[in-house]
Image (tube, rainbow, N blue to C red; front, side, top):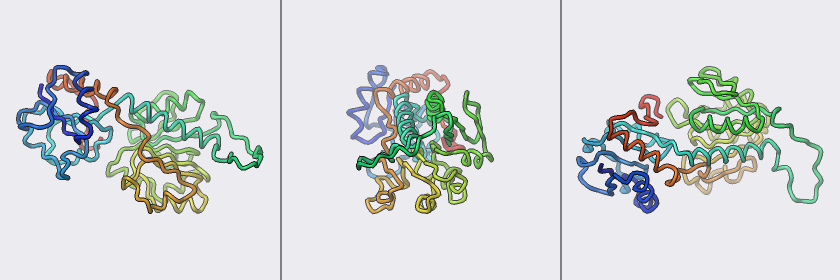
Length: 306
């Protein structure tokens, strides 16, 4: 099985040994005749000359396996006719759970209040988790994992997705019930993908539905929130804080007002990363399935965009 590693060169030294170890039967290549490849392992940034990859010459390829969970930078490529699979990496999932859990606990306990300045602040006692409402927008693989971890700590969890598919222990809402999910969210966790339907989903009108003083944790996509509306709500005191890991432009420009706003915490897209050692077995399984004609894992729905 000949597989093209269609990813930036800097990733080769990390990924090539992991992929070969997980799938010893493959011949992993960095270049060659497109018509001679059975599959592609793809990551954004390829080709590195800034052009858009033309998938049409890969006439023999049975699958394009993305190394990223998000596929918004490839799914709109009109030359892509091969099956596209997104990456569902257990290491990435665990990283996202830990990130969301950590910042949720910081907001829940009000850890930012305890400045080490000699002032004895014991006038506010945080509630127990069982009295705190957390809403999660996006209940796919990541959202369900985050919800399960929060439930284990006793939080009251509301989930929202277009389908509203049931998740044990979570009060699931769907479609038009988004305002209800927002109105409950003392802490709001955003894990939605970037699609035409989700861009600017949290505009001024919807941000106004959040309880006063709510915290937003966005580790989904930077396009989900209207930046100007978010800053206005924070500066008015309608919202308490925003923890932002994803942005419309990355790296976030040094002069962006998020950096200097005391109600915003910027983290540099570190919530979760695809780890070669845990993701390579997932890619290997799909490569084998493609060659055997078996159903592929995590197949992307082109119409939905994920």
